[in-house]
Amino acid sequence: MNRRYSAPLSPAEAREFLPFMQELVQIANGVIRPLFMSGTAVIDKADASPVTQADRGAEAALRRAIEARYPAHAIVGEEWGSKEGSGYRWVLDPVDGTRAFITHCFLFGTLIALERWVQDEHGAGFRPVLGCISHPAAGLAVLGHLGGTTLHAADGSARAVALRPCTRLEDATVLLTSLPGLGEQVAPRLERVPALLARARLARTWGDCFGYFALATGGADLMLDPKLAYWDVAAIVPVIEGAGGVVTSWDGGDPLASPSLIACGPDLQPEVLRLLA
Image (cartoon, rainbow, N blue to C red):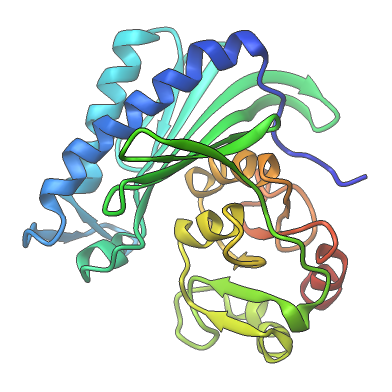
């Protein structure tokens, strides 16, 4: 049986938090869309990664909404840090793929996770119970938990989505954020990637959170990220697991404990881990 790293969402939690997650998507979209392709200033952070007013403004708006509705909940965000709380924690990455955003590429997105404090086989701590990958430019979002993953469109429609069957690398579409040798990722973790890509049916750098969106909606078969931050991972885990996929860190373990991701279907995972982990 494949290990799961998200925790179950109860029926009561689904009734409470699924509508609010959809509200948060609209709040983030309302900040981000007017700034896309607007010439908004780009600032280099201390780690040399770019940030814009879309990142900072969207996270600030999300935090205000969460604090107004659930003042006791904890919050962790990429741009504005951590707020202590109990019971539940929200994890925010307002613009995942800022480099895409500033180069007018539509593949950037917003990641939002809801976590609950649990005691389980992984130990005591916060575990994601609900995740969202939203693409403001496309007006699409997937919301996922262990009970299933649903695609929501700007016209109000919604439908269940799932990974497509794939058992062989030779039949797989493989996505990753950066190619080996471009200097953005940790080189030792990418040494085995070219051999894997050579066996794939199709390989593309349609990465960041879009790669996981494509995987969850049946458009791709494997998504790879050898180095991530916690706010990159927390929302993705329940989305992929809810869509029938499996996730591990790059070494085959818990991606929340060692933030990195190998995400695919359960039939493909053993061969991928043999080649990469």
